Every structure is written in C-alpha cells, then in structure tokens.
Length: 478
Image (cartoon, rainbow, N blue to C red; front, side, top):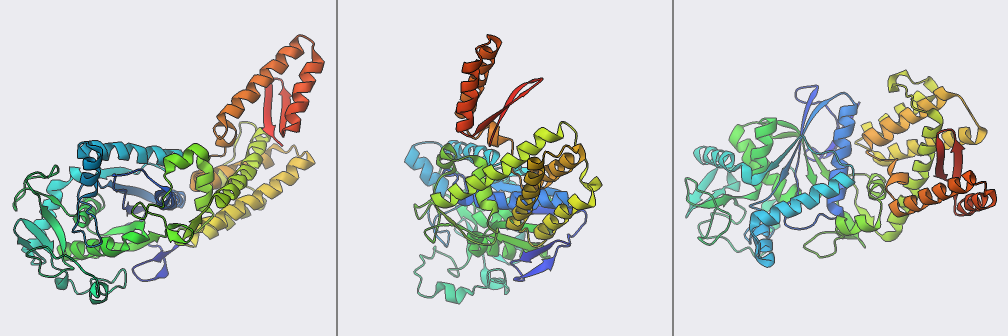
C-alpha cells in the first residue's frame, strides 16, 4: 500500500484518495519570467514520477499545473514589482511576449526530460473572472477587506494560519522591516487583488477598479476550478510552503469551510556547494545550458538518485556519475532487446522469478516514492541479465520477461528513455559510426576484406561492437 509523507501532519500516512479511483493532483507551476533551471527539473521530474506511479497503481489521475504569468511580486511579503513586468521592462517587450517565450522554453526542457505534460495547464491570466469571484466570497464572509482599490486577506481572521509550515507570524515579523502598504491592517495580510497604476501594463477591470490578482489567489482558484473545493494532493517546492501554500490554505478554507488539500507533498531544493540554487541568488544552472552539454536522461537519472524530499547538491562530478550509471543500465537494456525480438509479455504474466523484481520495485515506490530504491532494483535486474548475456542464454521467454520489467518499471514509471542512449545521446558519433558501417559494407561487396576488417578492428578498439545479421549490420557498445 502506498504511504506518502504529508507536510500538513508531518508524518507518513497511508494514501487514501477522496473519491477513488480518481486522484486530483495540483502542482504549482513556474512563474515564466526567466529560463527554467535545475531546481525546476528536480520539482517536475519528482512529481512526474508521482503521477506515473499513481497511474501504474491503478488510479485515474488528473494532473493540473498552472503557469503564473501575472501577479507574482518580488519580495517575501509580495510588496515589490511584478516579476514579469520587471523582465518586460528590462527586455523592452510586452509582458505577454515575455511570458510566452519563457513558457515555451519551460515545456521544451520538460519534454526533453521526458516529463508528462499535465492534463490541464492553466494560465493565471485566463482565470481573472474566477479569481474575482473567489475574492468576492471572502469579502462577503468577512475574511477580506478593501482599501483604495486593493483587497487584502485578514490573516488574523484565520486562527490556524501557519499549520502547514509550523511558522508563527509574530516570530517571522520580529526584526524584519516590512514596508506596510497604506490601509493594510497588519503586515501579514496578503493581497487578493492589487490596484494597478495607470501605466501598469497588466490590469483588468474589477468591482474595486483596475488591477490584477495576487499570486496566492491564483493557485486556489485554478486548483478548485479543475479539481473541486477539496483536492487529493497539492504539490510544489519546499520554498513555496511559506507563505504561498500557507496563504492558499487560509483563503481556500475560509471561502469553502472545507479542507483544501488532503495531502501536501513538497520537494526539496537543488543546492550548489550547500546553498539553495535559485534565480534570486544568481547561482542557478539553466536547463537550456545544461542540456547542451549533458544527455537529458543523465539529468533525469541524477534527480532519481535522490529522494524528492531530500536536498541534492549539484556538481559536475555528480552528473558524470549519473551519466555513467544511466549508460551502464541502458547498455544492458538494449542488449536484452536485441535478444528478445519484437515480442513482449504482460507484467502480470511474468514468471515468479522475475515477478519478485516488480514486487521489490513497488515496495520502494510505495514508500513515499523512493526512486533511488527503485533504481537499485533495476541495477539488480541488469546484473542478472548480464550473467545471462554472458552465458549465451537463448530462452526467448527470459528475454521478454526482463525487457517487460525494464520497460514498465524503468521507462513507464521512472520515465527513463533507454533508447536515447544509442539514438540521441551522441548524434554526431552515431552518424560517424553509421557511415563507417556503410563504408565497411562497400569494401566487403568489393571483396576488399582487409579494409573492411580494419574498420571493424578499429571500432572494436574504441569500444564499438559490430554484429552482421541477415537484415544488416547493427552496432552496440561493449
């Protein structure tokens, strides 16, 4: 049975969705004002595995992820400038132009990392009416107040504020200078709707004048629109736990009188030399930059080696090790696929000997999505497969069973693409090898066997093995 660590209760709990077999999961998406970085990869690869494993466990999952293209203001207490507006000013572009550009870069990077697209990808700017309606409800119920075109949530009216993060407002505000907006009753009150200056490029009409939504109201609105007033899982980065997720809980539960999310899952951060990797600190590595130098599956493998709730320290050495680990596993998978032909066998029909690998894998993933444990099972399977490969085993059923496990556990659940090892990791190298094979075949046809053998021997010295078959010559790494 699946157990997940619930940030709300601070303990592992059996997973029991509200309306089985349906599971609604909402994960905070990116604010699209800059390039995606390795921290984004950690978050979205982690939740990609959550979604994949839930589906493999028989649940019907609706995965909702937002795009924040308005309202995310600078500063811990959201009193600064809109991040996208600031970027638009720096780049001398329209805000929508900036948002769309970085949204495209985000999804392009996620596609390369083999993250499933969410079932619903919703932009904040497309849900302004719904945000205004939720704000009206909070005003009517007395949890919010309006002043000079701004609408604020009154935190003092929600006594359990802080229950997710365990933080107390008095402690947070001690010693911190916060510029309190005019008319705000308390520094901790947060904006549901902000009044826009006349020159503000992103603004909409509202009952309180021209303005734009606050960041926190956006996620509550979109999560409830597509998943209902109470949802199964709310996910996001640990850095969003306070104040963002705390504010989501306060406004959502005040509006509905119901628990907002049953389970809160938070992934930890990627660090560099022990320090959080982030845009604001200027120590982040963009995925676009990294994907030019590293295979996408090496990056995914690096993330899967850690636990989603644990921090991971980035270094070139750690990525080197991840790349070698993925290559080692992929070599075995591809060698097995050459043996098994085009046939496959359903997972439930595996012989007991091989079914034990599936059971061990599920035990790890059922323990709060322990991906590193899942990888260890795949390496154990690869070890046994290599013994069979070395023995010259020809039992087709054995190869089909092994390949089924690699496909369903490694590819469908962990999201690894083993085929990219030969096809896409080193495209120039692959083209050169293919050319040399064509040249060798030409020499053989012309009975220049010495030259053909020299090509085979030189490739062998470089670790490339050629196999001549009836349907042509294939190559693999030793």
